[in-house]
Image 1 (cartoon, rainbow, N blue to C red):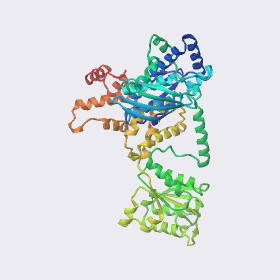
Image 2 (cartoon, helix red, strand yellow):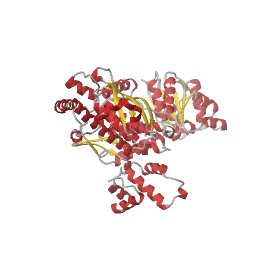
Image 3 (cartoon, helix red, strand yellow):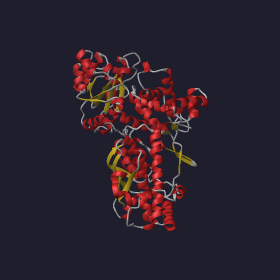
Image 4 (cartoon, one colour):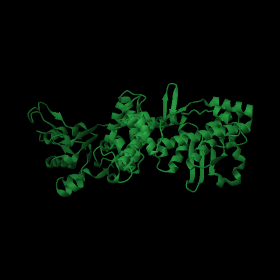
Length: 544
């Protein structure tokens, strides 16, 4: 799991009367109410005590979020777990947090991090009631960053704000270090992290900041402009390999050159073909697709070239083929590697002469159409073996684009899953359908032999079976869930005892149910008491 994969709607569960982060109750507050509370605190207990209260509040908040991130996810590295803190603060609308530098050595206890906070909500609160300050005022942000980093490091880490919008700087910046690295410079700041005699007041002021929507609105406007220009957009692409595929598609789109798209079944070859068509000068003309492998030769010929009335039994009238229907547009020949040698020869003539002949006619007809073909076969090898015409292969593959399988670009699994959830929300009329964050590790651990098509089918199945319009791990196909459990299994399976297998299975089910012992016992087919006894033997008392 990477910090950038976190998404608000998959972390937070919204329902009437309750907002929660995987069991931890949250409350949304108005920024103006927070500003008024800050003013009241200053008037009642003074500026220094207010700063201490809000710093400690932020510290507890950061501690709680760090614990939640550790409980819910498996992180690629300690640095990714740490980066989830700034990501959470950004998602929660507190500020737009950017990590400028990070030097983190958990074993050695060394920590040095610099962050920027853009559009700090806390600075805005202070400015609303007090105007410009003489010093930094993002006390909760400082506390949160310190609390989150301290939990991750297992030792005290302190952030000190260097610049602040509340005192007139353009953005807020802060530096965090372990206590030893700060040295004497930390001394005047330490009292604000200490609970002193006002710890009860800190707990009484458990408030959280509301999230802003300005950035989201700007992004939606940009996306709307892009959609108007290109039509339905492709899914967000994170992998370098598929990014190169799209770059090649962008470069070849303006030209009428023939394109051959290769790749395993289900990787999205037709999606790429449509993308190229949308970016081409032929975008306003038809895009017609035909699966060459699904039709026998006689039907395929009539489908592509059309026929004259009386050409064969049942041909009662003239019929225009797809090559003519796609005039000035694009024809997509899927599974081109499955056509017969005779059909290969006829297609070669079409590509060479740019003309077709209807079945039953002797008069050629000129066509103006771009050809994009696709196959899951190795046509280069087939040409070398003599099962596919070499000259046709070279005509089709002036530009050859290979689409990598999904297992080679796991970064794209999560954006694709979210895309399918969005599509299914409309298709199944489930406006609140969402993917729970606990599904992420299972989806990314699976190899997806059926590629994007298998992922789409798995998400649809889960959407149909899920409860409360929330897709959780128990709703995913069992082989996807078990794939992660198998990957996490310890040792050679041929040398593991039954007790070890049972222990791993119990722990996998506990993780699947997010520590819910009652639900885990139901899945395992044992009583809660028996499960408790087995967990005691394992030494794992987590869960509820």
